[in-house]
Picture (cartoon, rainbow, N blue to C red):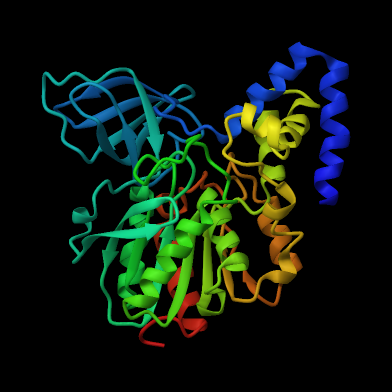
Length: 385
């Protein structure tokens, strides 16, 4: 309530004083925060494809130069192709091995989206799986279920602007540990039901759909739950950990490139986008008030104090593994480090560098997989422990 009064005291006078033009800008910035993207941002330029050698030449960026295996969302003949090792690079271009065969004569447009989402379908993992529906307050949410022998289940939660496919990279390590895995969707992600406004709540309401997934798991034989959240899915998982009526059954949390405090993330992204102060602070304030939140496209006000898990660190009660590259470039690792410092008794955070946002598996699959499997064993969560 104090934060709400503070927001009112700042936002309303500011909007009146600065005038309608600035008010419109504030609402526009706030709307960008909560509005799901309906098409992928084309952040990669394809310069050439050699169908004989099965190589692709890309404009060099901090993402396209990364070693490892990645995905590339394209338009034309192919909607998605897999990329392998960097074969050569100069100051402006990168040539990589194609892991998806591109036939001669195929049309592939220049604009593309570089991605860490390597697997697009659960069938690519060659593991037993099934489609299930989870009844949540938002409606039936589709999920993928990968069976295992343990009564400890993993529930994976994808990030903002992505789908469940993002989480498939973690299924093999969980399977090797004997853990059943439920890969869930949540409201407004393009697969689960849409709310009236169709907007993200940054974890403030999405956690209820994950909580429904926890209840589903408990009804179907789970005794303990490990939550794994990717990016915004980390914020959703942390909200479930402190708000769920089943929180005593949550035995661990794995956070991959997580959002731990939205204010830290949004200030950083505003700086990258050259959105000048005080617009980011005013936009976050606007999202906390019923009227301006509605004008911004949100279903309900979003209270950023409730989403600050560094400030709420004392409420956490289970072991946490944080996997976050110091060179993330999208969600800075500052809040993750702050959470580790605040709860050194609970949080394990091995150091990762170079890898970009949610691309630790892609860049260092062995190190990433080892960190998870050793942590699961140390916490007594793997089936062999």
